[in-house]
Length: 432
Length: 141
Image 1 (cartoon, one colour):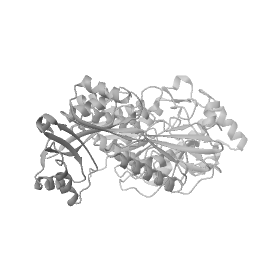
Image 2 (cartoon, rainbow over the protein chains, first blue to last red):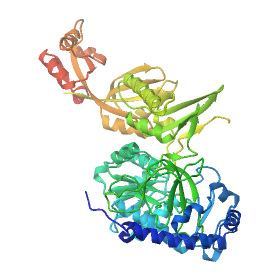
Image 3 (cartoon, rainbow over the protein chains, first blue to last red):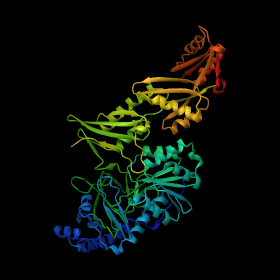
């Protein structure tokens, strides 16, 4: 086990008292910025009878109003910005996973702090200034590409800015330029791994050592698949554009949860229905207050990601609070015949039963009945009887894990879409 | 001694097989034996070819999921009763044959049989002890 690397040990391993002081100072400043410069927030404060002076430390956080996705849509494009145009350095947008894109903005300081998060993530994954970092996230308004790009540069590494697509060329560059780290979505990492095999390239012969993957929820089972296909260690990175982008939280060498850059992005877990805070360890909706942001200082932003916080000290030495791998988004959640189903649970069962994590969930309503069909890539064996019995096993495992019966269809890989960015895993044909 | 077999699935629709055979023709894949087994929605195509590695690559390039495994190849006399000795030996040893396909080389007076068993090493030992001739890929091209 190599020794743990930190990009900013002074903050990543700071005492809780020190973090509390940093967070409190930034929150007080942020609240003044919100009240003074964002009419939307000033109105909310006034409605609540809340004055900026009422917020004296991070312990007062719960007095503040929530912000949600709809607020960004209602004020599209710039309504929640707290700085004039001349102070902005960058515009990005949300990936539009859950509907219309919304616009986010950064001051030069915001870009710097976001990049620090992304550099911390790369360092925690074992990346150093001597590495080539191959970035196959999409570049552009999507935060993935530029987020890791700036993080890798800040770390002092050498960036290979590939963007996504043209997978054979990606493999060629991995080989020719000797990339050491790969950054992309986990589904694209799988596709690159499969393409490697198709092209007859042995991953053991490549200098590729690790990967930092995010922008969609993925399971530990998928991690094993990526690690096998690419012969690397795979690390999770989390972020949402509204909060900053990739690097809001990241896995360390222990890989038991993602450390949140809580000096910039203060997390809470709330019950999505009552909005009341939940105790540590309980799963609920992740909420961030962007205490390190100037341009778009969102208060208690509801990410809709479902996860839990872990406060126990991590073996890596970081004191930053950890979040569990998100189970999914509250709006990814499917309700099938009254039962809550997350695509990540389905994926977990698929890989556990020995199938590849390439699948598609189709939901239909026949009569008054919801039906869920899971299309899975059939295994290749010379004994088709084994495929049939594996399908039956998979169906049984789905029933016992999800609590509902699911139709399993094994199909050839060409019948399943391959993704170069965020994978489409669910097709809901119900007209509700 | 074993033989490399390449196998893949085909959807059970008119034209699927033609497309694959065209691919073989284009890529110069030389088949010595094949078998297609039907299984409701799809068929399993199993084949013995001159260069299994090249065949695999060609299939994958053509967007077909293919894999290879090792099976046993035996040569028996092309005459009534020529095959039974081999199967008797396996059956006495309690070895189950999962599937088998064969072709005769009439001019040589021999028949060539592919056997899929669970334990190649054990089956090969028993066949050899029973005086059955085992062959490899290079023996049949």
